[in-house]
Image (cartoon, rainbow, N blue to C red):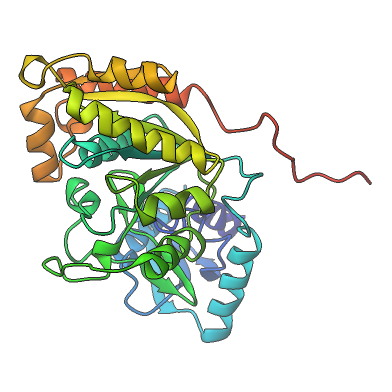
Length: 354
């Protein structure tokens, strides 16, 4: 009975990258109990797994929390190639066409007409705020030429996807699973790719990354209406687009174009976020874009030193200074999006009559 209790406790330990119980992933080979000592044979997905320390800590805490267990003898190894292949096959079997038309995941593509409007900082904070509300959130840094999401989330240069077979397990920053081209190139490297390579990169981010069962997928698009925006429209025509602008009329006029391109690819423009609201950047830009696109203004995020400093320090303002006016505005937007729930209406459910 005690061995069963230990195994049950291990069933509550999650792999931080795959986000499923280690027992479900066949990472626990054997459990036995002798007196008050529990012996656990644990295998990680790969040698040198970056989540090894976290998993070991959680396993020890779980086992020592079982009544009657005073100590643990823990043996840690790595999966054999056949075991790893079986795991990859099982994961792939549950994720085919994960973000296809029938997905239950809400997909938000955040775009802007021009650079310098704070789109990436806003996107990262929005994703973190959604995760803080208990949602399972993935974030694709699709701004291939100007990638910045890993730094904003405090993910250092060593944060890389973990390869398991032909799948990539994305690193997690501030509760959000993240993938970015910045994880594959040196930080000072300039990415100068053309359309086909850009399209394939975005496609791989969507299909070859193990996202798990997400509630929300957020994409940080590059500014403008170029190849990446068109690829996202082709790959995710059912995504909902959030257009970011500053209050100044010049930025608003350009931002409108990104919304129009999204509609041309079949996407729905959900609304507009006016960032850097305040006298410094003029007024009326958010309202103007919303009126021309016939959508609501979802949020007005005031110009904020804390928002900027948090992005530079890798400490998103919604966590580091949640009472800051910009953080409050972003959290209100997150509340509104979280209240929408998963995208059930109109979707086919994976059920069949007997």
